[in-house]
Image (tube, rainbow, N blue to C red; front, side, top):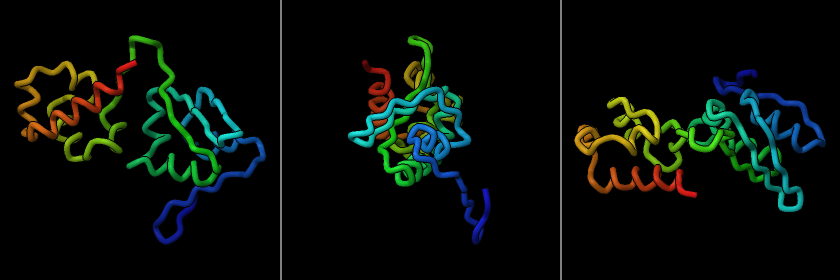
Amino acid sequence: MRELRNENIDVISFTANPQLYIQRALSPAKISSIRLNEEDRKAEVFLHPDEVSLAIGKGGMNIRLASMLTGYSIDVYRDIEPGEEDIYLDEFSDEIDEWVIEALKDLGLGTAKAVLNAPQHVLDQADLEDSTLQHVLDVLRAEFED
């Protein structure tokens, strides 16, 4: 990584192998597996849950840049066992405002299941409008629906 006018610049080696190129573009996140659809230029990337935030980046910036660089539409998935999944709230930053996530984390609710299982009186302490809280709950529930 290098800097140019206080901006971080990542340099990756080009390869004609699309899987390796996507893997390099998402580095330093460690990828479990990649499924490619070369005809539609789509990639499904599977990562350990701890690596998802790193691959997506703040506000989805890393994944957008990797998609632009590789020419593939990249979808990121958590590689986990059924029943043990939980998701850090930070991973919802593209759907939930950062200040809302911080308000919930300040209450000790750092994961989706923690919010979904929290009693109403705890959620009320976040001092969110009813419509905002309902939006958060809808987004989190949708993530766990099959």
